[in-house]
Image (cartoon, rainbow, N blue to C red; front, top):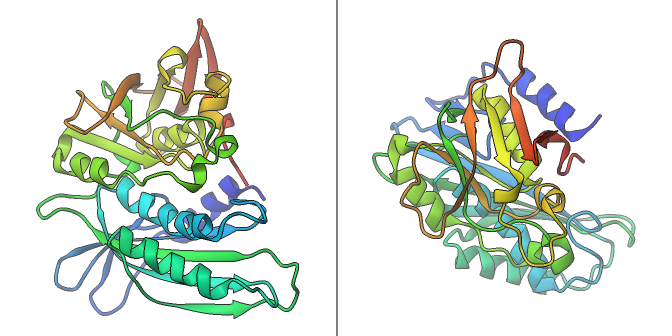
Length: 299
């Protein structure tokens, strides 16, 4: 079963979630974060992400960069909802006899403090075999600015334009996937726009696949102009830019260019599906239409 198929199964099984003690799920599985209403009426964002050796970083990668990425991935999800990170939990499944545990968790704690979400707890386990891949899991919780709501994937509207917080492509080859900066400031600015920003997503699996997720969640069609996609130097064309993954920029839908620092675009538009047309994203290149959802990571 592919990751996208498993996600659909999880979403279907998670309908009608009921929480205890006065808590209420406002957004369950299917966005960058879960959104919970507390018994007192406050809103909490919660996300969790894994980092697996051999999948998300290569053996021999610098310990500090492993720790940084482990925290940054979840912080980027909070940013994609228009929130500020507040606290984190971390777990580690270590290979038997792993010699860098102290340095690794000290670095994770340092990076968590850097993004104002200190590690308040977690768990460590050791695998029975020394060749087991190092696996880290980080949960981060956060909040949205007072008086505002989280920005979801599902709000894009016909007539919106599409914007990026930075160029895409070449993240893995360049090593930028280990050093990216979560777009907290830009996400907060998007939330403060109110209804002016309709949808937002963290580009973890690639512009193509993640744009398709926005389109399907919003019951819309996203049309992206291949020539308008801003590419990092060294990216060999728009296909690599849309499908490389690990960019961790934010894709933003808004009717007009929002007041967000460093925004690039527009790179495309949102429209309603035509008769018999399914929601989805596409990339337009020299008059040819390419399904965007086929470009990107599906583990």
